[in-house]
Amino acid sequence: MPKIVVLDGYALNPGDLDWKALEALGDLTIYDRTEKENLFQRAKDADIILSNKVPITKEIIETLPNLKYIGVMATGYNNIDTAAARAQNIPVCNASGYSTSSVAQHVFALMLALLNRVVAHNDSVQKRVWSNSLDFCYTLNPIHELAGKTMGIYGLGKIGNKVADIALSFEMEVLATHRHPVRDARLGVDFVELEQLFEASDFVSLHAPLSADNQQIVNRDLLHRMRPTAYLINTGRGGLINELDLKKALENKRLAGAALDVLSSEPPPEHHPLLGLDRCLVTPHIAWASVEARTRLLQTCVENIKAFLNGKPQNVVN
Image 1 (spheres, rainbow, N blue to C red):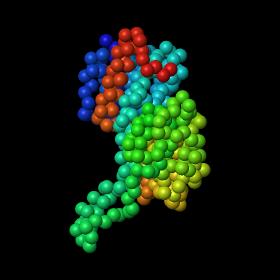
Image 2: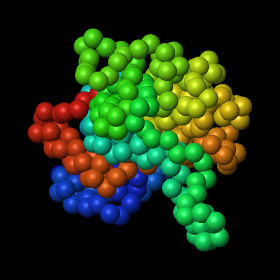
Image 3: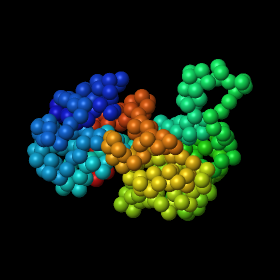
Image 4: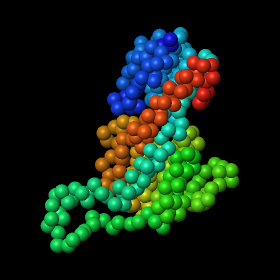
């Protein structure tokens, strides 16, 4: 049976899922986390390695004599040197689509947190502000409906389309910018140029994969095109945003607020520029991490290995 090593299993399974399906495929060793200095020692005898975020470089690939397969416990695979793996005839297989509903749900959790401020209102009630109020109700800020507002979606892939579905159910107008507007046209979504997306939207939600072409694409220029009442939502990749530009835009009230599930450095340094800002919500990269999404991810990883062992690897990215 093949020797299978999971290098950083904690994010996928912090203890609420079952590894049995993976155990059935080989001699399995699971590490919650693997640092660079431990990588070779842990992977040196492996036929199959699974990584979420552990970098698998050309150097390490060329020093693992038994390695035959690299499984990515995620959709993104920029931490894997896919060319080096291909040169060694090692397939790199990822998982996609498992977190679509989970991420879209989190987008609207962030939007509603910005608008309704449920936690802040609850905190005020627990501090007896309501008990001492002269009126039967009060609000900490004006509350607006999503109905009639405009949702701008940067990247209309699987997750972007799911966000569009939910936005339409809230009776929002939906704009999108996308590489293939004619091919992927859909009812209820109007395709516009990037600048117009930022100018016309009440909410801009980022869903394009990160590449060299769009690194820090959300910069001073685009942020200054946003309405001062508009909000920026990012559950995609932190590198899509120039974070210093966003900090300045928030401080100067160029936009009403931002809600981010991803940052350019994760975990962020304690003095990250977007931490501690009044109108910037940050969650710790959890949009993908519902129990249901992680269950689907684990099952996809298992099915990918089964396909490889049967001589028909699937979801190959190299």
